Length: 138
Ligand SMILES: CC(C)(COP(=O)(O)OP(=O)(O)OC[C@H]1O[C@@H](n2cnc3c(N)ncnc32)[C@H](O)[C@@H]1OP(=O)(O)O)[C@@H](O)C(=O)NCCC(=O)NCCS
Image 1: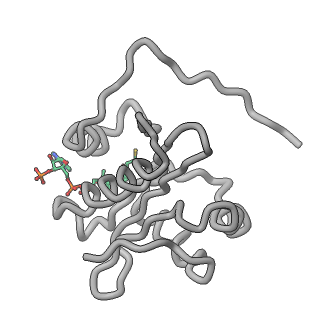
Image 2: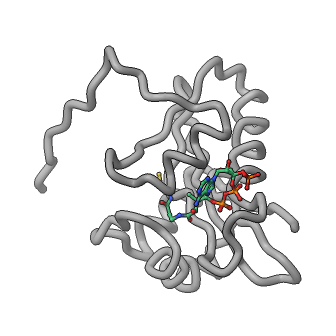
Image 3: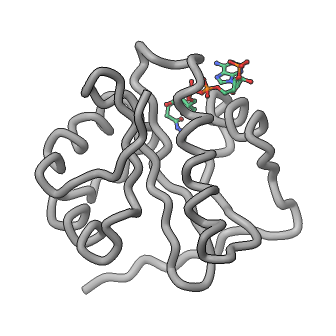
């Protein structure tokens, strides 16, 4: 398995991959928004591939202050083979280069599959904090 950075050319294929493999895919995903991510940070989108075929993704977002993980997704036919673990490790190695001291991930409360994988990678719920949100409308 090889882990590399996603490229603008494969954005349509990545959007299809997320429909197949990701949980809770944001319906507002669009090619333009992924392109903007890659333009801002060409190393933010990690792609795992086997024999040139995409089997997993993880967005390793570093905003200059904190490290955040999004869109951990592994092809249903390639799960439990360590792809997710390798992606998380690669993201953590990227964050270490920036001096990040902590990384967080958005995880749905009822996504048991994800809970197994995050726990196995050393992540835990931070009970004293909650997510406060406000939709931004143009
Ligand atoms: C969550 C997900 C990314 C895990 O990817 P994966 O490649 O299967 O994970 P790994 O093979 O690296 O598993 C790492 C460890 O997690 C745990 N784990 C993963 N899946 C598990 C399952 N179904 N049951 C129990 N433990 C599991 C195990 O400890 C596993 O290690 P092991 O196989 O040596 O026992 C994958 O299931 C997935 O894409 N799910 C749908 C999308 C999703 O929910 N993403 C997370 C969003 S927050």
